[in-house]
Image 1 (cartoon, rainbow, N blue to C red):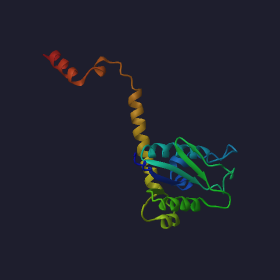
Image 2: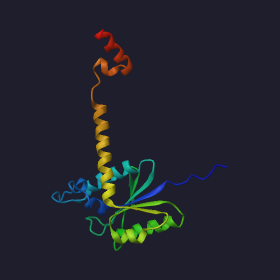
Image 3: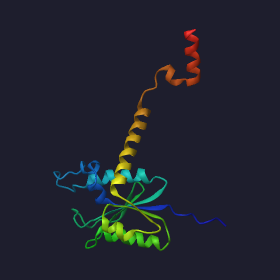
Image 4: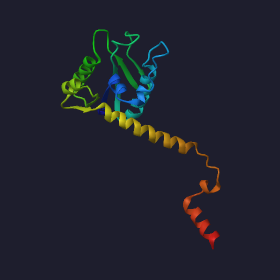
Length: 179
């Protein structure tokens, strides 16, 4: 009989708490367009959390819908990240606490990303790991630099013959040419 698959650790991100902690996201705020000023910041956060969670976590980002242009948002998923907008009259903090409590009863490992001291105090304990928003933002910055470097390397043309041959063979050729 096959063993039941162990679920990945749940990563619960306090969305607006992380957005407000970083210039990476705040620089994408657009209050001039007349629409939702958080749209681009949320999109960047979703992409970052998807990359951060890849293969290790089942990611969930919780947003407080009370102050949004459109507070009635359905829960949806993008890029493998589940998005949860708190219902009208309920804070994102309450949603995060409920998610963590549900997982604790399974039991299932959970990592909660927030710098909100109330949430950190409420959701602490086994099997919950608390990570500050600053740590996630720092990790996202490092991950972005790593991706940019890898992408630049892939984009660099490898047109020279010496770039296309094995380094050991290239060294032997150089030694032969030098005599």
